Image 1 (cartoon, rainbow, N blue to C red):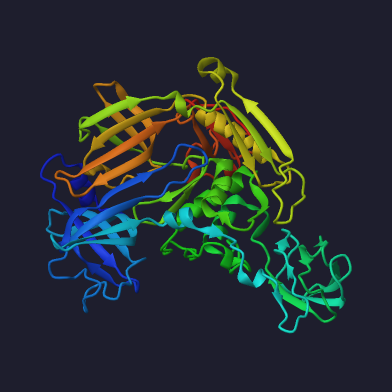
Image 2 (image 1 turned 120 degrees about the vertical axis):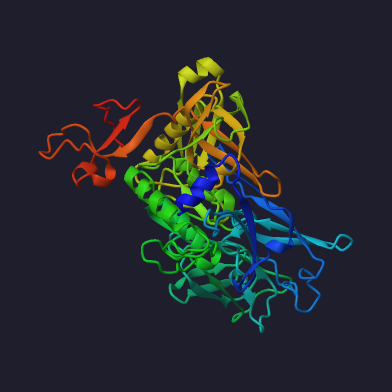
Length: 558
């Protein structure tokens, strides 16, 4: 937490002493203070996409002085000698010299180096740094392993082959298979026994015909070559369980995709090698993921009670597309915080959240307000997985369910502006589709108000996703509540400038989701007149929703 003195320096209009600290963290996690080499760059930009199904990563460049060849990878003794700097980190912190002469810094951004450009004429180097989300943007999940390709026996006489192996979710397990020719000949004649190390003999495959075992989750075809099969010809291959979940909290699924570990047991999952390998430490010391944000969001998803999902990852799936298909359901987001760790948030607001005020009476130097109809969604159609029926990996997902909804009031104002979504996730009740469609309509049924403004060091600790209050006399904004959707920090300018975009959607002003009660529900121990933190156990079972702080708010069911 920032000290009171630090926060006071943030608020100063004049005479504050901002200082930058630039650190190089090598692949062995040794931290080097390289502030003296800093020339320019370190301009950080974080964006939280408004679209309900998008993830955006960030990057920044940093220019360093190299007059003493500290950044020459071919010079013995340099910090990057040998070229092992891809994946090392640059950490940018900002702080102040406090009144007592001490210095206090807080991290503003962390980037992983993925490119180096030298400028020998000016004795400089430029590092391009990307945040952790770039791995999500670039990486494929459940890439087919070479062990799942059938290998012909070295003594085979027949020179045919086995087609690509296909698996079935919720059926295929880790095991090895042997195909042995028991009747020689060509297609339509030759027969092979199909024997698994776990399943045993699961049937006979005829050359030239597709073999399929629903119970074992295995499908392939044997094809003859120019020389027919003879008895004793063999093929061997392995199969591995697919990354799959059976009615698991959606937030816990996201955790397991990012880490390869089960949220509840903190044990590595059998298919961990098919997904990301971010730090799985379940504490605030996690270096990759903001663990506390996952605790908060998983708890909220559990509270809603509609997002225990069943689904799987097919071969060569785009990591970003897969995560977006889950986040869409509760309008969630994953994004990079100031400390460089991935944060996870849901559609529900933070209980008891405090707001920071930005005002033209303080440090706002410019401000503009805009609205666009381009961002309106007022009609939704959804295809989704309704039946508990799952295809082999050579077939498309079975999206046999359909749902549609619309907002007639919004349509009458702005015309029909629709969107269609495919949801490859199943629940036991299918109410998740109705719920997320209603959330999208509520959030996007009117053009949002976007407020772009420049401010100073008072925004040093502000992150995307924060809710703030904006006051500006000229445009008439007073106590305007909005959510930060973009933060751009320029640390090589003087004075330091922080630009922000704050967005107010149609539902943002509604105060909802506070747990507790203000009236007597007849439980003998009400009313609960304080907040969630002091509520008793019984009152925490109630939720009240209020748009205007009325004494007796309307009650609704999650």
